[in-house]
Image 1 (tube, rainbow, N blue to C red):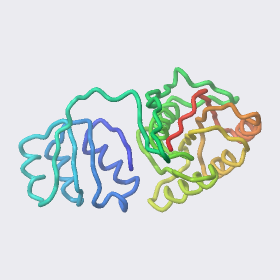
Image 2 (image 1 turned 30 degrees about the vertical axis):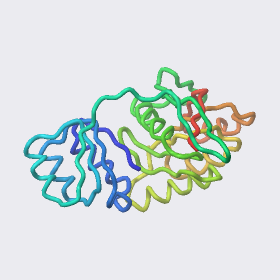
Image 3 (image 1 turned 30 degrees about the horizontal axis):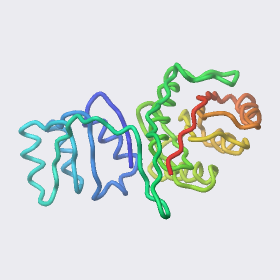
Length: 235
């Protein structure tokens, strides 16, 4: 799963594809912007099973239809559910859907150094990705660009190491990037690893009795950290 936003659908697609061009083969592409011919030309280079968009130009539709067995769907506005259901042993679990996404207005700066405007925008974006990926989750990003994510790990350190390795394998420079975590850091190990990798700003829920250990490391090494007071877990 890869995410990106950009002023044009073509650029957003290319940036998203760069996050993981290997896993993208044979997948599903979804855009919240109409697909024009320029975007369709890029999309047509990749084998995909399904493409979902709010609309397509005539030229784009003609090109995209040229590939057999490709499913083209038009996304319609729908009312999203407010609860979720999951089957469990001998029953069903009902829970409220996680509809909350924090913005910079809700960020609490806990370090001496505050994030720059660009870092804040990157932190917002990383947090959006973070809430939609399996816990334990670490997301690395720059403004509007997912660099890598480590997801579904039993250890948050493992999630971070996975994300760093993936980012490097796809040629991303992590210097000046940001990190989002779906839960707090009970130890400073994650911010230590992040700082050594070139990450300069961090967003996390906060709430650990040892929050100060991570904050102290950030202060000593020039990282910015913000907390949200909200924990996102997707299991």
